[in-house]
Amino acid sequence: MLYVEAKWALTVAASREPPPPMLTVSDAKGFARNGGIIELFTSENHLKFIINVDNARRAGLRISSRLLQLAATVDRKGFKK
Image (cartoon, rainbow, N blue to C red; front, side, top):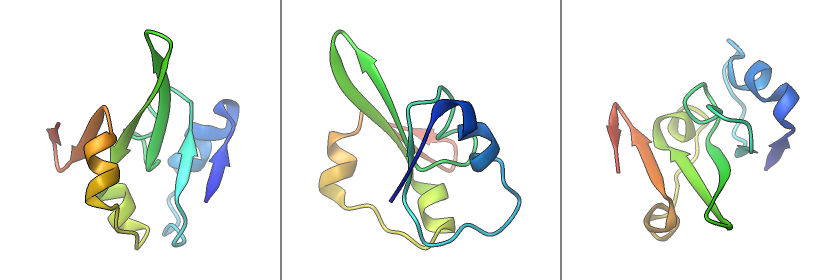
């Protein structure tokens, strides 16, 4: 797992190189939409997260159904939960 500080998040997420099999996590806005796998955010004093399933697959990872159920949003091929 690699946590990416917000100031570097879009650079890492937008990398054109094939991603290594690594879970990327950041609190940068738009991280999951721009190539990252898990984006953390707060809402009403609660920590929540967005998961981008397509980015996880490109990195060779599978996200468990239990973790997907806990996510505030799940992005996959244009579909959002």
